[in-house]
Amino acid sequence: MSKGTFAKEDIVEDYLTSLLTDEVVEDAVQLDSVAKLLATADIVSEQEEFSIPVVAPQVPEVKETYDAVETTKDTTESVFVDEELPVPTSDFQALFFEVAGLTLALPLTELGGIHKIKKVGPLFAKPKWFKGVMLHRDEKLKVVDTALWVMPEKYTDELAESLNYQYLIMLDSSGWGLACESLITTSTLAPSDVKWRKANNKRPWLAGMVKDKMCALVNVKQLIKLLDKGQNSNDN
Image (tube, rainbow, N blue to C red; front, side, top):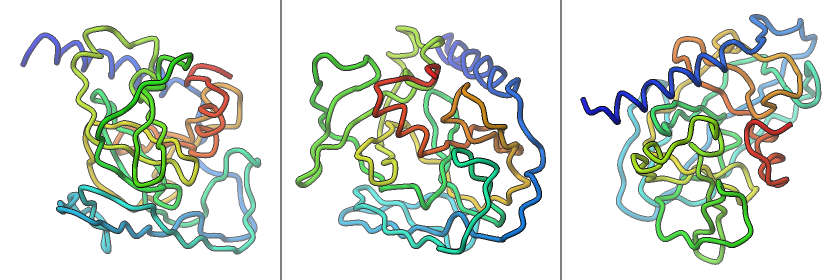
């Protein structure tokens, strides 16, 4: 294993440790009404296909080029811990992907699609983590350097050179996409599988930590708000 690989692993371990030291809540506050937060998303492909390893039944097949994902959300009234950090009361599916050795997860119903990264046109006077725009049909998709955005304090020239972004994970219908190196799997999670964070101003993009996978579960709505403001993961 190369020295660069060891360096990347050390960076990721340090970062995960810092995330895990944040205050989390083991059990959600007792909720009176039951609502399904997330539902399985269908991903429609146009070109050559490949499959994500299957963990849960009826896992969608991920393919080289993807259209926007159409999702069906339960309209049953939900009760939340607060308006920014909804805690699901039933099982939900999440997509797991990797960036610089760090595994991230996001709920499938907030997945706007997955695209193979092609040419990205840089933009001037934008934050360093904003890599530019990628054209898809008539859309201009905004590409985020995810490693730089998530852990700017750990981002080095060596880490930047080691990155090999392959896919763009779209965040709902926002037009923002997280660049990632590999797609890992989709998996069904129970609310008890996650250490949910208490509502606070620190890392609002982090919904909690998936216990057995030791990875961050993304709060997509909060992440979009930060991106729209031009802020990175450490900004309040």
